Image (tube, rainbow, N blue to C red):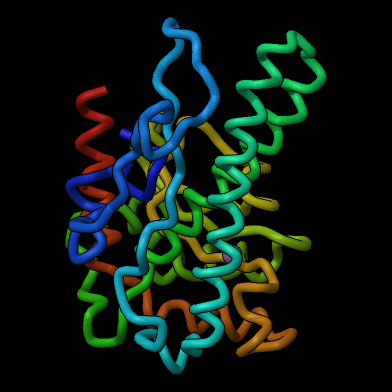
Length: 250
Ligand code: MN
């Protein structure tokens, strides 16, 4: 289930470790802690997006990413998407009340951008782990990579190529194509463009300039290549297993 408050849509796998204990739970607005706008009782309860804590210290991914770069990325950039998502959510409720469809469309676009940014950043943090704690890919994941790409190295090459060549801002994302029960690499623009459905993101690498410029300047290819040093293969394999389980259930 996709939970608005954080990266928990594959709870048994994606939220393991320290982040799970502190994973934010969406809370209804309208209570004492958050007055919020009045919501028609026929609508689902409003939830608020919150910034999840990193599952490791800011300096834990050095030398791949400096503590300063990671702190700025998480506490400023990711936080801004959370703020933007909540602002868009509130504005959308008000826009609906006006009956102005143009306004609803405007805030729907804003919401899609900010929520997707929030979601992908949450996955990005979970996609990485400090050296020595990345674990190994499961045999099932390796087999899936072989079936979908030829082998694991071919998957890594395709993912890295996607990250290197995004025009402007975007992401390289590996995910599970529910319709074909196979792995797929996507190249997203901004956060939400060129999305494919039905697709469960399992691994994300942020290639917006703010993700790497402080440490790598214009050398995006070096940043993307270095990403593999910190990929949390164990967590990725667990998310893959959950996605397969979901495909069987659903
Ligand atoms: Mn980012």
